[in-house]
Every structure is written in structure tokens, then in C-alpha cells.
Amino acid sequence: MCMALPCILLAAGPGVQKNPYGEELVFTQQQYQVPVLIKKKDNPVLRIVIHNTGQQVSFTDGFQLNLTGTTDLKDIRQVKLYYAGNDSSFTNLSNIGKMKLLGSKDRLSTIMWVGDQQELSIGTNVFWVSVELNDKADPLHKVFIRAIASMQGHQNPVAIPRMEGVPLRIGYALRQHNEDGVHTYRIPGLATAKDGSLLAIYDVRRESGRDLQGNIDIGLSRSTDKGNSWLPMQIAIDMGKWGGLPEKFNGVSDACILVDKNTGHIFIAGLWMHGVLNAQGKWIEGLNEDSTAWNHQWRDKGSQPGFDVKQTAQFLVVKSEDHGKTWGQPVNLTTMCKQADWWLWAPAPGQGITLQDGTLVFPTQGRDKTGKAFSTITYSKDGGQTWKTGQPAERLSTTENMAVELSDGSIMLNMRSNKNRTDTGSTNGRAIAVTHNLGDSWEQHPSSRGGLIEPTCMASIIRHDYVEKGKRKSVLLFSNPDSKTTRHRMTIKVSYDDGKTWVDSKKILLDEGKSRGYSCLTSIDNSTIGILYESSMADMVFQQVSLKELL
Image (cartoon, rainbow, N blue to C red):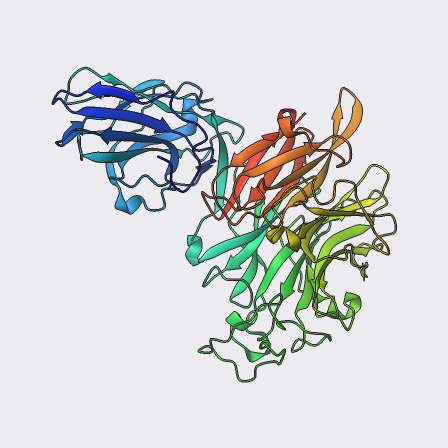
């Protein structure tokens, strides 16, 4: 049976066979719709379960696999078979050290055997088929493996019931848990530079997976070949030991990246916390490396009215003029754009936009004079020299958001709505508002609170402009966990009518597994979409999706 995740693809029915020793063995195989990742050593592509319903121990001598449906066998470096005992729960194979390797194959064929003799205990026996991809595997290709037979006691193969599965999409494990000595990577942002480079940003949470305050920097990965490969990680924002406090009391988080499509300049905004405000909103004196004080800008009075670093979290921006190769020193916009009585003004993580008239727009968020959360935009009409913040877009509590320019030139803001924590009914959905005057006033969009469900989580929305048969066209694309209750089922959806409706038959499921659920989309080129997201398979996963799948 499936435990942690629902089985999306089941065998046609259990196969009951007598093995050479007389016990009954029941075979099932199951596939989970998750990405198969370049740079990840073990990717789970198939689970095989043998239920030994007899009264004595039996054996298996491996499985015959069918790789028909895999786009190109050369994408795969190795296929491995593991025995997991009676643990039938879903796994991303991070617990591989607890499993027994039964065999591997690096010379592949469409039909092949893999494995070695394994004792079958009475009850449940679980096997995982894993693949490791070549570094140059095509990210638009797919992998499909199913089992067709089991060898029992060196006798004739025993057929395993057919599984009607779907090929799994290839992706790239851009950042993995504990990679480069970093505990956790979180909060994706993704953009395409004017020279075509892809820029992926994320929190580098060095010591724990916890939110601010902590030893957190803003990391950056660049790709010059549309995401097929990635250069080593850079650090875009790091406040070090500013003010004499340890790095764990100078964290920067929740970054947003914006490309000026006219100049090619790139901006990254991040939220910096210096020290800690206690639950009463008072800055804690005397912090040192041994101090354990912690608070968060969204928790009780973790950020307060005012502008000083000891009063409120700070809004920083860094700039690149060479397509992301190098970055300038942080510029603090807090006094320029924050209202004095707001408890907080912060970037909304993800991607900002350039409007048709050249205006630069960051999605932003904050807490008003009562501490209530709000969403808005912050914009610049002079190439990023000066910025101005709009009014809250919603009367109810909203936070993380992304903006998109509609065909009439208005700006749509797509917002995480805190009421969805308890609303799982027909009114569960992203809060969506539109402004015609850069955030001075807002009106509710017809699709608000019902058009796009969410489990109260960050999401991404972009406008993709493309040319088809000589005609300029555009669609809106949206990504988030497609659920009202759980951060799982990472999905891309498409709208052909400026977000009024979203075509259910065209949505693409990327990862059915549970994750932290954040994502960010970008247009790679005329016919290709990119997404960076927090996956069940790795901290940061990048994937390409062909536009034609969404049209």
C-alpha cells in the first residue's frame, strides 16, 4: 500500500504466482510523478512490492525491466536496484544508506535484468529502482521504467502485472540538502538576463532550515546554456558581521530578482535583519556567538515601526551591470520607501517585471501600523535610481505575491492569502487584485479567491510573450502546489485570457511529492519555460517545459 504519498499509477492488478518453494507471492509496482534529476545520485523511478503470503521465507533473483518510453537511453548513466525491507513508505532515496544495493547496470538496453538474490521475508518486501543521469542529459527528455518479470529461484521468470505509467520529466538538482556545507537552500527566484543567461537565486541557510533570524545569505547560480548546466554558486548578498554582531544575527532572506529589459541591469532585493527584537519589540543588547535569542519579522513584534536597524527589518538592493557576473554593494531603500508607522516593508520573493513603458516593478509585502500583513508593489520610473511603494492591494491579510502586466497595461497582483489556512471550501484561492495607477488604488480581479487554489504558500505568475506563425501572442503562466491543504503536487497552469480562467486540461504536474512548495517561473526563449522550485527530490530543482505542451 502507499503510505506518505498517494499512488498516482497502480498496477493493473496484483499478480499471484506460486514460487518454486510453494508460497504465494503477490507482485505490485508503483510509480510516483516526480522529477528525475541531473546531479542527484539516486532518483526513485519505480517501487516494486512483493507480498510473501506464505508461511516460510522465499527468494527473488532480480527483475526484468522495460525502458520503452525513455526518450534516450544515453541520458541514463546507471540503473540500480535497492532492497528496502518492509518499509513501504515513499522516499526520495535520501535514506539510501539504510537500503541494500542488489545490483546495477550501466550498459543499458530497452529490456534488461538487474539485481541479485534477495531473501523475501514473510509479509511485505519493498524494492526501489533508481537511476542516475548523465550530466549532459537533455532536460526536455523523459525517463520511463517498469518491471515486467521477476526471477524466482533461478526458475522461469514470473510475470509482474503491467503498469500504465507516464514518462518522468528530467530536471536539474541545482541545490541539494547539505551541499557545499550548507544546511538548507530555500526561497527560489528565477530570471532571464538580457544576454539569455538564466539567474537562479535562493536563501543559503547555512546552519538550519529555519527562517530569519539566522546565518543566511542570498545565493546565485548562473547558466549560460538555458539551464542545461550551471556555474558554481556565487553569493550576491552577505552582510557578514555588520555592526559587530555574528553572522547568525545579520541574516538576509526572501530575495526577489528583477531584470531591466531596456538596460540589461539586474536588481536583487533581499530582507536584512540586524540583531533580534524580542516579543515586546525591544532590540536585544549584548548578542554574541553563544546567544540563542531568535525572532522573525512576521512573528509577534519581530519588526517594528521606524527606520533604524534596531527598529525594523531592512530592504536591501544589489545591482549587476554585467548580466549577473558581478554584483555591487547593497543599497538600503528602507527610508526611501517604507512608511514610518509600518511594522515591516519587505521584498516578496520571486521575480520582478519591466513594464512596456520601462517602469521597473518589484512585488513587495509588509505589515501595516497595526501589524497586519499586506501585499503591494514598489516601482521605479528612472531605471532603479529612486523607488516608490504603492498602497496595500487587499483589505484582508496577504503576504508573498508576484506581479504581471496584463494586455491593457494594468498590473495584476497574485497574492498568498492567509485566510486560506482555514478556508478549504469553494472560496479557497489566491487573492488577486488589479491596479491601473501603479498601486495608488486597487480593484479585485474576477478570479480572486476561487480561481487558483492554494495551501497558503508562495506562488509564481509570469506573462510569456511569444511569436507563432508571425503573430505576437501571450499567455499567463502560474505555478504552485495544486492543493487547498498540502504543499504537494507542484503544477504549472496556463491562462489564455489574462487570468480570467485557467485551463484545467492543460496543467502540468511536475512533482506530486510533499515539499516546502515555493517556485518561480521565467521565459527562457520563445518556446521554452523555466521553473525553479522547492521539490520533494532536492532543495532547489530546475526544469524546462516546452511551451507547446501548454498551448
